[in-house]
Structures are given as structure tokens and as C-alpha cells.
Length: 411
Image: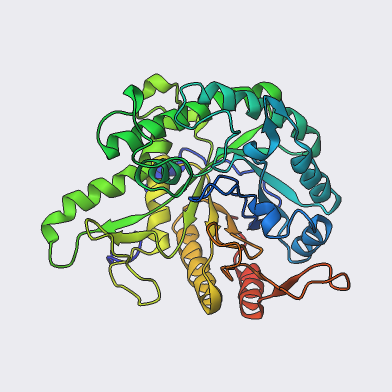
């Protein structure tokens, strides 16, 4: 076994637990940026609107279907749909109707960081309140799906917990906000307490969604990371391993392996979504990134990351988010698709690959700064005569077209 590749073949015992096929319209998927929290300045975000998607639903879905992207990740937006205890799901229903018209399947994220103004993520009432909303959303969206609908109750529990406890990325949260008996202790303990509360909300939401629509499936999305010691401090390897192990906590709690008092169980850990970006590998302590564009040899290949997830959980896997920026997009896709192909050859059940964002997105902090990370870039020359203000990135599109022929998921 070479150090940079996953072992060839999986133990026979793992194949004895079959990975059921997720109900997806297509292996290749698109993701719409849907964050809707208050940014560090307290400015409310609505990224689905900011990227132009909400104003161009029909043309967007027409283009997605044309490119064979017949499954798309969208966000309902709890903060956007509930105020003063009143729920209005009109924005989500408009997305569902447009997607249905064009034969595109929607995988729904119910909470993409934001909450209604009268409930805090640090509030002990949060889990029950969120579960109530989740049940209402599932009941309203059920008629738009002929196949079992797929829900991500809360997007990226691990990232969200870290952001709330360690940064001021989401207003009004931050290290000083994580106080009180339920969140007392060190920053790490605060993050873990937040993670527990989010998992409890997810588990209650699963019950509420299943009550509204027993067909429902659940996609639990988290970043997968790799952490190493600084080159001149190999003695920090145990610490690097410990930090890397935190990525499993949310999935372990959902499955009932960790903190079973929350109510987790194996059936709750249904489908696993992996978010994979260039900045997801770093040195412990220094926080220096293992730069992809510099080809840092300490980076762990995606195929090995996928293999580690499959070995731990044996659940169907999706690449729920991946992309790069600018001229690196096509090369990034070539690498990701090659690694997925290797993982599939080794028996890892990767059932989907989602390009996220599929449409260019502005920065959370600066609405005038566009990331140039989509299959289509934002085009500032949009007008009445050009109602779809986007420009296809030809290199990225060519790479996608090549791989759509070569990579179609498990057979």
C-alpha cells in the first residue's frame, strides 16, 4: 500500500452490509449557495437571491437540465421563512415548482445557518422550535416529489459549531457570546456543547419530517478534513490526530455512537455528504494550510478521505460540495473526479458529485466581490435583453462534459 492511495479492495465483511442506492436523479449535481445568516457586521444574507437564482428560476433549471445536472441542492431558509411564529414557505415552493417543471430533483437543506430573529442557536428551546419548522416544511414540500425526498436538516454542524464558538463570522455569536451554564468551560467545550444542541435539533427534526412524510431520506453534510503536525514538530502528531477526530463527532452523535442520551441511532445516519475544498487540510497549532495549488505533499488525496468515511460508517456517500476558484476550477474537477473514480474502483459507494456553487456567488462580507467559483460566472452586463446574467466558464464546462461520459457512479 502506497502512502498516498487507499488500499485496493475492501474487507469482505464490509460488503455484507449493502449500501442502498440513494434516490437521485443524476450522479452529477449542482448546488445553489443558500446561506441566510447575519454576517459579521449584522447584515442579513439571502445568498439564493444574491446569486440571482431566485429571479431566474426557470432559466436556471432549464440550463441545469440541459447540462445533465438533474439533481440540485437548494436551501429552504428557516430565517427567511419564519417570523413572529408565522411560517411562509412561498420562496421554497416557488423553487420546487420551477424545478418540477424542468424535471430537476431538489435535495433540500432546511437550515443554512440562519434562524428567525426570536430564537438563538444557543437557546435550549432551539431544538424543539426547529423541529416544528422542519415538519411544516416537509409537509408543504411532499407533493413536489414522486420519489423519496431528501433533506439535510442543518447544514455543516461541525463548521457551524466552530464558527459560533471560535469566530465572529456569524452575528451576534462568538467566543464572548458562548457564556452561561449550558456553554461554560473552554472554547473547545463550548463548541462541543453547541454541536450537541445542533445534533439534538437534527434528531428531533428527523422525527418531525418522518411524521409529515414517511418516505423522507436524510443527507448529513459535513466537511472532511486532514490535519498534520508542522514539519519541524513531528511530536505533535497525536494532537493533529485529535483535532482531525473532531470531524466525526456530529455523525457519531447522529448515529448514537457518541452522546447516546441525545437519541441518536444508526437509522438516523442515512446518507453522508462530504464537503471537500482546497483549504480543508492544515497544520495543527500554526493553522497553516496545506496548499493545493502548491502541491503540498502532505495533503491526503480525496480517495483516501472517502475511504476513511466509508470504513467508519458504511453508508452511501455523496460529494455534497466541491469547487475551486478562477482558472483552477477545471484542474480541480479533474483531480476530484479522478479520485472519485479511484474510490469507486476500491468499492467505496460514491453516489453523487455536487458542484457547489453551480452559479457564481458573492462573498458573505462583501456583496461586490464575486468568487468566480461556479460553472457559470456572474455577468455584470445582464439587462432586459439578456435576462440570464451569467457566463459559462468554458474550461470548467469542458472538464465537466468529459467526466460526465467517464464517471457515472456505482454500477
